[in-house]
Each structure stands twice: as C-alpha cells, then as structure tokens.
Image (cartoon, rainbow, N blue to C red; front, side, top):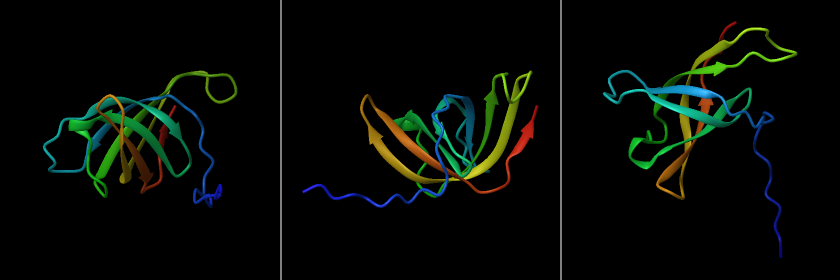
Length: 111
C-alpha cells in the first residue's frame, strides 16, 4: 500500500544551481565553504557539503549566492546575501551530507 505524504513546504522550490559561499555563525572557527545549491525557494535552500564539513542541525549560517545575468531578471550578475538555520541534515552517498537551510531574515539583493 502506497501512503501519500502530506507536503509541508510553504514555498515552491526552483532547481537552481547557484554558487554559494556558506559560513557558520560567529565564533564557530570553521572557514567558509564554496558550494553550489541544488534548489532554492523563497524560504530556504538545499545544498550538499562534505560529511566532515557539515554544520549540525540548528546551526546559524550566513551565505552569499552569486546570480549570473539572465534574460527576464537582470542584465548583470548579482548577489543574494542572507542568514539562515540548518533545519535538516541527511547523509548522502560519496561522503556527502544534504543540508536544508531555512532563511531567517530578509534577503539582501545586490544587482
């Protein structure tokens, strides 16, 4: 018997692969990581990090996404800056961890 799971997401996810610089909150001592998002929504993002570099759930993070120029939204490259919290962490193959980051403040757009 197949049981349908109730969708809990409030925002539609877009499969955007954007370069992102991710850093743990103040005092973590961990250097920032250069990664690529798997998807992004108005409420958060999902990305993969190496297992040894994954912040724990509930860790506060800051990030900067780089958005390339594109027809319909911007003639020049831009950045999206913000802060978030790791709300889910899941082991993936090849020594990676999938992180779901929920945005915790209004995003700053620089185009």
